[in-house]
Image (cartoon, rainbow, N blue to C red):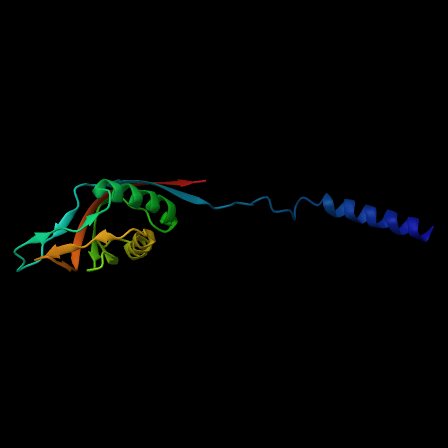
Length: 160
């Protein structure tokens, strides 16, 4: 009998607390922002010439600029963390290609709000591309060079 009384008491207590509507908080809100980004990488890429070089040959990528552009675009959509910045406008990236054909540095312009995070992400994206460039040649010798890429970004921010 004691067990039955205890069971009824717990049942009534739980039912009484369940009906208390004033203490319940219905303001459960989840904030989730999503940035949609459109990337347009312009061709041709611009090779920065080296001063004092009579026989200069620009750096090249296996498959040409179009192949690099497609790989870069794919990696940008995969690895850019666009939740931290909204991109709109034209940007120029300077890739420094060493004498071995590896991209050793990426610098971006212009500097805008939160662009440092974006430029760090771009360095990560470019370094993820495992194929090397054929280095620029000066008088028959491979040399360090710079390649400029122009891009246009359009962002659309949506709350989900």
